[in-house]
Image 1: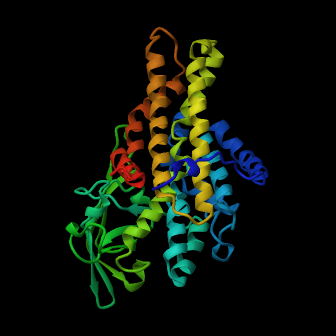
Image 2: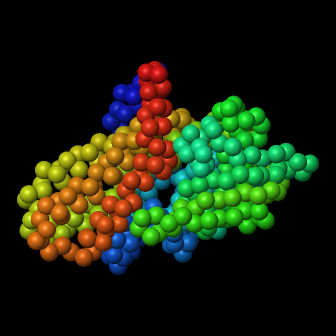
Image 3: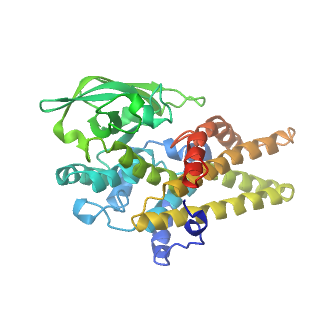
Amino acid sequence: MTNLVNTFRFARLPVATDTFRTEVKAFLNSYADTTPADVRARSWTGFNADFSRKLAARGWVGIALPSEYGGANLDAFSRFVLVEELLAVGAPVSAHWIADRQSGQLILKYGTEAQRRFYLPKICAAEAFFCIGMSEPNAGSDLGSVSTRAIRKEHGWQLNGRKIWTTNAGNCQYMIALVRTSGTPDDRHRGLSQLIVDLSLPGVTVQPIKDLSGDAHFSEVFFDDVVLGDDAMIGAEGNGWEQVTAELAFERSGPERLYSSIVLLDCWIEYLRLSGTGAAHVAQIGRFATHLATLRNMSVAVTSQLARGASPVVAAALVKDLGTEFEQSIPAVIEAAICANPSDAIDAELYRTVVYLSQIAPTFSLRGGTREILRGMIARGLGLR
């Protein structure tokens, strides 16, 4: 049974990260000052390869990867600071996001030395972007039932199937796909493996999916007799479930599960300050600040576990579930506050920002695992089911 009390004991970032935070803030000041809030609110989905390369030039992509593979060899706490500051101003992180956060770490832990030497320097230079191939049309968040299949051939694998809700597949060079290499979907977690798929190969088709806002960062990806080499396999065949579970701990635990709506919150507070109408909303702003402080502390505590080499699956799921609920509450509350006084003149930038986040916020509790799946994991970890 997981002891969540011990997991989330008060945790602080090391004092040594303060200097790094100052450096990151200085770099980001010009971006935040010149980019409208409704554009910055798309931070998670803001694909900007040039911006990613500027970060890479400073050693800030693959920041926690070893220097021998092109990384900055900094710790998980430095990455926490970097991510927190990037999201706080709404910087466009989407291009390098997946590779930096989880694909690189997965390759480092489970990949062969040849895979590390080939992929990791490209990730750190922002020359190779990765997407995640997990969800499927008939599986969703139930990853144990995936049916995309790779069949062993003489010199590699033949891949058939499809993935859905794949972020930035049309802009990425590679996908790490969870596929079935033996058995059937009824076997659940047994027989699953992870493969690196070069998305430029014949037989790969990427079909964009538009969301309510009109953006098209999601995609459905089709594999029709895609031929992969032996070196496409990451880790041991059949070990995919253990690997993907470890990978999701990185995806679910960081500050990226807290700050998706923070640009809107800052924009609203500034509007209240300038309009002189903030007094009526002081209590609500205080609640937001209290919730954020608590969730941030929990996220730092999970980062501490990751830094020690642990895989805090249940704790990460809890942070993700509570964090996305907080993220979704911000546009809902601000939208209601604006509608409560329809005669007030609303700043156009604030209006565009709240409209965008109201449309996209439902996806916050889908990406990285639905609320129902996460709560099932938490219940099992606590011995409740």
